[in-house]
Image: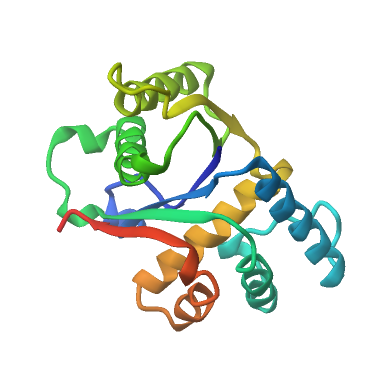
Length: 209
């Protein structure tokens, strides 16, 4: 099992200085490695169909709108699931949320809790370079909360970070996350794009209530 993670928005709480209202994290989950390879191949083929360079990065917020709909039409036919959590940062209380790394780890934990019943010896791939220390902390944190001694198997086997520019399936997670975030914000383009992948939705949670 492969899980690719990306986010939309930021973990900052300084709204008067431009911090986003929400922080959204999405998991794109492949139960079968062959399905992941098929989706990766479809993305590469789509670049050729759209006349894009081989190293073009599909990035929802920074991409021309005319490329978004073909992307979701094509990838909506692939075999994966997605799970998203959208955190309304204005409703957060407690000092822990002021630490960006702690906030990020907790947001990941929340969305992984929603996907927990599906996880089976999963390899987790997260966008971002990050320090070695933070990588170790995040890996240990997720394993500690997802893996139980009572389980017959590990829900999370491995956690690693990779550069989205070099990983098409992190780009897929970015695109899905961007579309869901736009839809939750009430934007018509997000609604239009998400309808191509709505059947692949495992859960979208808005938190806290």
